[in-house]
Image 1: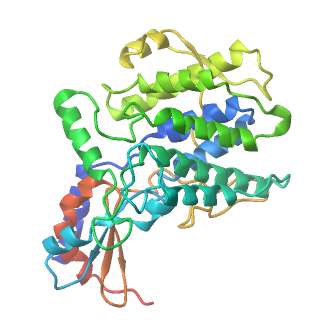
Image 2 (image 1 turned 30 degrees about the vertical axis):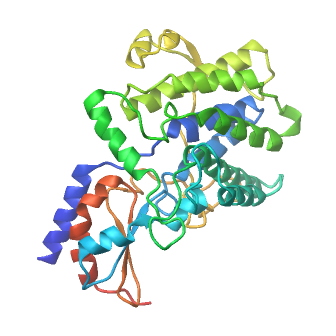
Length: 371
């Protein structure tokens, strides 16, 4: 009977939601074009941007809510008293332990950001050491970018610092409103919502420029960053998220083409260009994309990261173990057990909350693994 219940739980959760990487248009596409604009070689820009996006794709690093369950207690009471942000939200996604003010990054978050960038190794000719450096830089940039969109969404709902729910409520409600009104209003991670995008791009560009190879380093003018921010913000408020991610990939690619073409800037090797079909402008509701020439942004090569946000394996030639498609399924809560028989459930998608009553019944009855 318990096995049937577990099977039904898995099926119902998978039907409710499919795991997807949110906001890849900032963490991946925009990071890639900013790295290229700052003078990073294509291969290096790809590793940096892939590592940035990988933080939202690896189960050990993706943001999650956490639910501490103890057998014998009311699941409803446990839910309301112990649902909180996982500690990795504070470490990797720059939520604050304090409520903070909208638009202002809290002091504890600035400390976390500084620590991430301080951990980026110095430049090194050894391919393995270089790959680890680029991945560490991508990890640090992810936290920095999140710090701007997450400002004002920290604090404690209970006795544990940083235990509040982040912007889970706003994100969930944004999807409901989008289904009714066809427009995004509340999800602060959406690049068109709020006023956080430009300072996030400025911070990203600054860090990339400071660490770029000196021989190929290029300056990105403030006006260029304003243009990129404005173009991304104008795209996607009335589009489904999956469509918006693709459209902003074209927006970022067009910006990079214009940036490189306008100044006749020397490149390490020519970027691959593509001319967009006219219908893309219709799908994206963006006339500037009509038959536009853009830099083709390559597919991400997301590294497999451990709980410390370090790559599992980097080979001597600088290649690394990739996160395979399907490795992460955010539709199924992750469950850990302890000697006290307490159960820790991590939820990386809001719809998983619907399954919490079943999870609390199933998890305590699962045989405890040897310690």
